[in-house]
Image (cartoon, rainbow, N blue to C red; front, side, top):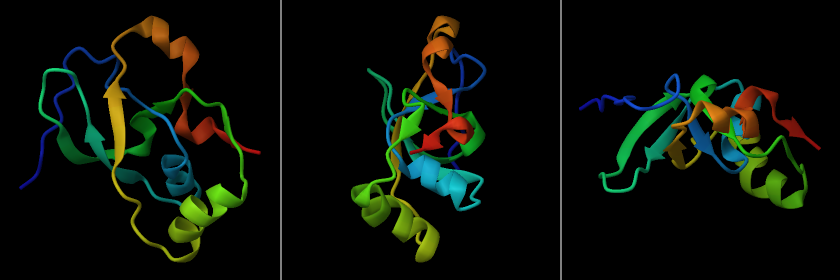
Length: 108
């Protein structure tokens, strides 16, 4: 059964996320990722989303040993599917000033 994403109230269907799994998926050439959309007062929605819809509050992520071991190695080298990430809707155009598209996050 395919879950349909309802984007009413979202700013152009964008969702925010914190962490490195989506960045690793982007660098591995993936176009989508499993997600859990969490909204207060609503049941969680488990689905897949294009990485182009995801934004993060981080403009850079350290490519340290933890990132390599826990995120990059399983995704890039082993080719495993990352576990679902938790995302939340971006409901305000004002908030877009404070988030970065996943494809623009720098690994440092």
